Structure formats: structure tokens, C-alpha cells
Length: 554
Ligand code: SF4
Ligand code: SF4
Image (cartoon, rainbow, N blue to C red; front, side, top):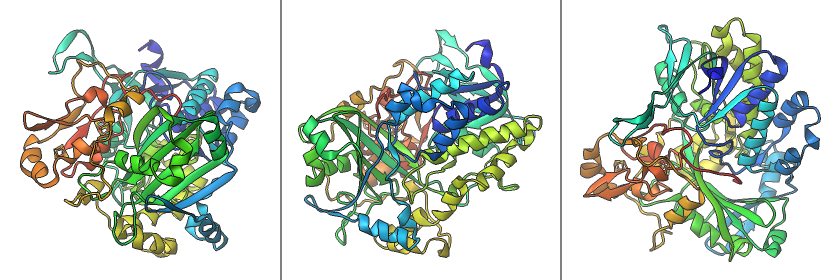
């Protein structure tokens, strides 16, 4: 790392929409403040994966003040080329039947019910990789340092544990046993006055900070797992689908009345760049089926007659997986003494804080909005960094982020508590409902089997190849099984080692009768294993910088 970033005023960890919005806003209102954004992927956007439907207002607000003529740029025209003009909300019953239930959403909106927020007309269907690349360039143009290939492993607090003094980068050049190789470089310490945690879902540093600074959540941080493919189709198929349409489908293959399965989530179909269609499957990580793999559900979804006609015969050109934070309002990590989202000079943003509105199934706009608020907080407390997190939280509470998170506060918990069948209708009562006690996702596993499981294994090798993931093979594994004995004596006999099945990249294998993260270099950084191992027996740490997937068009 160059000397530019060894000591900075504002260090932003994670170059996603939230972190880059902070950099852009801060450089707009206080250009003299030095801002450094560090990102573990080798290039901007490589680790960013999302649906992604973007509610554009916060982005417009950000850019209108930062780059007044931004709308004229080629990048803006490319990233925001697809405005949503047609909303399909579908219910799939079995492999062939489908019903458009958008009228239910319209009625819900009319009567002021939470479901009514699930509308997308006027939004943009975007590639989040491209959005991130573009925002990164804008941040650089405004004078922020945006550095890729720098993975962070720890946050260093002062003695009081109320303030962060620095972060530590991952050591480079250890071999598989942890021995220093000739090219060993110890991870640098970067000192900062303000630390902005914008790593995305289940951020490593965020969770370290939550633990070290004793932040607390009122409810466990629930997740869902999303798998997505971008498929090259014929021009006829693309035109038939339309480049202004987005489809969200509930029901088969993850939920079927009475006979099950009973999982929360659904499938998506979005237009990609010309003659490309993105299909995805998002499943609440509180699934109970020990042989379930979201990729199996995606395969079933792609074979549903409504979906198949748009993609049949197409070629997958990119694929990926990630988790989405769904715990909502009650799962936001806060300082128990002050309720601040962070502590002292450390602020937690976007997906790292869990700002996804599950009633809209969208979080990108909240991520950008939280970035704007963090920048304002830093500007206002520049001489009093210890007050930044409190200021940031005040601004969030007055913003649309808090309004949305409050309106959706009981939705996901109600479904986690009662399941989709009873939970969905119950959630209509919104704020009138109490806060239900829910369990961590990993505690939901049972010996039940997924009824639509195919006989043959999903082709994870091809999927992983389409994510173009790579790591330096000879480095220390970034995945640890804490107690191999638990695998052998408890998990394998009861659940048949679900990590082997659900890891989308085939990282886990049985080697000499022992379950191991045998292929860590395939890892997509989705962190599903850390949250779904039924015995909470896996820990994910950051590999050397530049490793991981290379999403470009997702
Ligand atoms: Fe089971 Fe977790 Fe061991 Fe995998 S790592 S076999 S999921 S206990
Ligand atoms: Fe995701 Fe874990 Fe598999 Fe990596 S090893 S791809 S983080 S489930």
C-alpha cells in the first residue's frame, strides 16, 4: 500500500454502493477531507452481486449535488438504461401453473398495507457490478483514494473500546500451514480518525467490531441466500420478455401449500444487457431441509413453464451467490448505551447494518442513503470524531432509511416464527404485532428432505467457473471448521454434512472420512457456510486481497 492510506482521516472499508456513496458525498461537501476506500476484490464491482432493482432517488440526490451533469455521461446511460415499466408478481403452483397476483399488491397499496411497498415501476434494473464501477470512478474523480485488492482482517480499538484507531490488513504470503514464504508481507496497519464499515452482508470486520465494542442486536441477524445466473438468450426471447419488465415469483419450488416445502423467498427474472436475462432464486436461510441447496431450487425454477420459455436453449455467461441480510430493524447492531449504529468514530452502513427493506425486497437505495448520512455525520463531527456514530444514527433516524426499516420491522420475524403460510397473512398486521422471538438460521436445520430434489447433483463446477472465482492456491485456508469431531459424531450421522450440499461452490468435501473445506480457492465469499452450518462450526475469514469471484455484469 502506498503512503497515501497509511494514515487517513476517513477510512471506508468496502467499495460497494454504501461506501462509495459516503466517499462521493463527503468529497462533495468537504473536498479537503482525505478519504480512502479499500476493497478486497481485484477490481471495482467484482464482489458485488444483487438482484438488482434500484430505487433511484438516493442515487439521484447524491449525484445531483456531486456531479450536476452526470445524466449526460455514457456510464450513467449504460448503468441506468433499463427503467422498470412492467411489474409481474407471480405465484407458481407446481411446475406448470402460474398466476399473476400483482392485483393483490395493488390492493395492499390502496389499503396502506405493508405488501403494497412491493412495487418496482419507475425503478431501474441494474448490474450492481457496473453501478459500483461507475460510482467508484466518480469517487476517484472527486479526489477519493479508491484502492482494490486490500482485504482487511481486524479492527483495532483504543483501551476504552469506544473508538477505533486503525484496521489491519490481511497478511500476504503465508503457505497452507501458516508458514511465512519468501514473499511474505505482514498486513499493514491503517490508522484513521473515522472508520466506515460498508462491507456488505455479514461483514467480517463489522462482526469483529460488534463483538469487540459490545454492540447488540435485539434479534438474530436472519439471512437469505441468493443464487443468480445471467443467461444469453435469443433476441426473440429477450424481446418477448421485454427490457422493462421485472418478475418476482413466489411458491414452487420452495413453497407449496399443505404438502410443502415451506421456505420463504422466491425467484426473480430481470432483463440484463441486450439479449441477456438474469434469473435468480432467493431462499430464507432458515430452511430446515438438510439436503437442500438453493441451486437445486434455481434449476427447478428455470424449468417452470413460465420461466423456461424465456431462457430455453440459452447459455449461462455469469453466475454467482451471496447472502442478503433480512433481520431488519431488530437485527441492526447498536450500542446498548446510546442506540447508535456503531460506536464513537465507527459507523455501520448498508447491508452491513442490515438496511434491507424486506417489504420492498430492496436495499440498494438504503445503502446509498446510509452512505449519504454517514458523510454528513463525518462532516459535522470532524473535530469530534467520538460523536460520529451518534450523529450518524440521528441522521439515519430522520431519514427514509429509518422510516422503511420501521415499517417492515415485524415482517421477516413473523414469517421466521410462523412459516410462510401463517406468517405472510399475519404480517399484514405490521406494527400491531409484537416482536417475536426467532432463532438463528443455523438452528432451523432438521433431518427433513427437500421434496423436489433432483437425482443428479447440480453442476457446481460450471457454476463456479461462471463466477470466475480464483485465489492464490498455496495460501492459508480462509475457512475453518472449529471442531471436526462435531462433523463426524453429530452432523454427518444426523444431517449428512449439509455444508457439502449447500455451499454453492463445492468447497466442502469428505476427504478420508473427514469433512473439510477442501477447495477454498473456489469460494464465492457468500458466507452461507458460516451462517447455515447447523452446529455453527464454520468460520469465514478474509483471504488475501484480490481473491474471490469476478462479477462483471451481475
Ligand atoms: Fe456439518 Fe458444519 Fe461439520 Fe459441515 S462443517 S459437516 S455442516 S458440522
Ligand atoms: Fe459460500 Fe462458504 Fe461456500 Fe465460500 S465456502 S462459497 S463462503 S458457502
